[in-house]
Image (cartoon, rainbow over all chains, first blue to last red; front, side):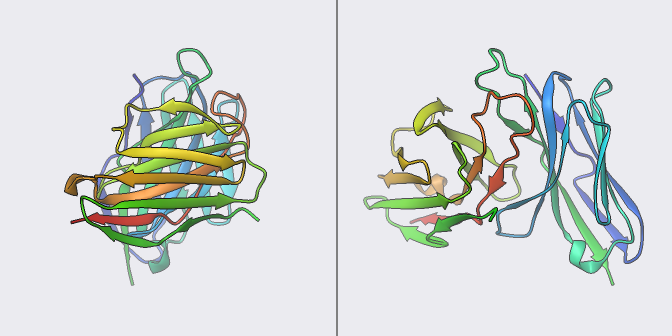
Length: 116
Length: 117
């Protein structure tokens, strides 16, 4: 059974700091990994998706990397801003037992607070 | 347009009520999902529809009844809920069915905050 871990559960940094959020997963048989952002009481916003054949994806100040063999992904946020404060979840889409029922397995998320 | 819409935004219902949650997407996606999220927990998959047919039911109690009237709409009918069913209900969609290899990025709606009294 796939397990996704995100540590620490919460992180507080001063504005302007570059930071790395970590995600690890136990089963490397995945199609892709997705990073989401969730503001309190809101839905999930997809930030980046990395295919299993890719090493990294970039969007603006965000860069996500994937090391499938070691079961790890990182989300790098450059020059953090107070508006980046949110919960960041990673989710892996496994290949599933039959391939027909693969689904997203989420980590518990990292709640980020960027202090002005 | 990469938007998934959900109505209502908030819903308060008694344990004897019947209500429905609605989800809509116009991206031509062929898979739609219902998730339940409790406070400070990750989303939990409830149902998946692929090409308008139910393909995954994660052992959800029968008081939750999904319906996919067409490829753009997904409903969740609620009946005789319990207070512990109070949560944020999220709808999502993806271009292809869940078992498809490749991207198949999931797009989420803003959710319906449900309170059962």
